[in-house]
Amino acid sequence: MTVLSDLITAMTRGSVRVIDLTHTLDPDFPVIVLPADFGQCARFRMEEVSAYDHRGPAWKWHNLSMSEHTGTHFDAPIHWVTGRDAPNGATDSIDPGVFVGPVCVIDFSAESARSDDATLEPAHILAWEAEHGPIPADCWVLLRTDWSHRQGAAYLNLRDDGAHSPGPSPEAVRLLLERGIRGFGTETVGTDAGQAQHFDPPYPAHALIHGAGRYGLQCLRNLDHLPPTGAVLLAAPLKIKGGTGSPLRVLALIEEPAP
Image 1 (cartoon, rainbow, N blue to C red):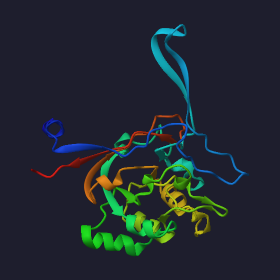
Image 2: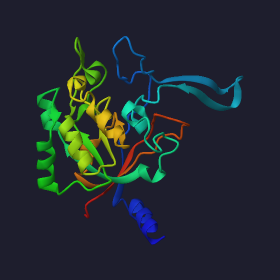
Image 3: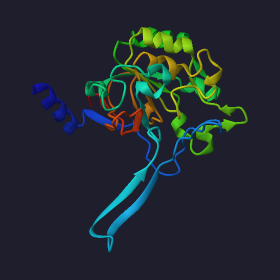
């Protein structure tokens, strides 16, 4: 148990810090908006059951309702048609070891500040690797865009032709899959760019990543607090029978530099 004991000691001393990458679930947090012909994602709702009163004198609790894909959430392979037959592709059957792992953070914030439709391309990934080393197999890759600093309508950024937000090109997704990544995470409402319906294939982060049996995270925050490499991600969805995804609390462990 020396490794785990050392970890707890480091956390107690402050040399390992926990970073919360999760937005607060509340009724005002934006959810993805699909064309009117499709079913829509439900916002978070919380109904009080009792509050130390005649409905329950010694306890307070709530009933909750929401989509599996509301707020900061996890995408399982079966969320997308390409992953429908993935082995252990639902939230209750995924190996729990998947939920803890190493992280690479690609800083794409400058490009995203210049254009709402900034597209991550293979050249950006190769430039990142030239500076930080190859992306290791079986790691999470998180795309930092600072999009989580936006609120309300600016977060979805809907226009007459749909949403406009940064995301990866099909070629970038294919390169990440060639690296053998475990999953891909973003600060936007989905893992794809807002205009990704025009890509080939459409919505490549969903189509290709889930088709490969890999995982997604979206609506992350505080990615600007993470180093490019070296952090450890903890992202465990609810164990929903046949679940396609789940809201969750995403945490990262980072080492603090020695004083």
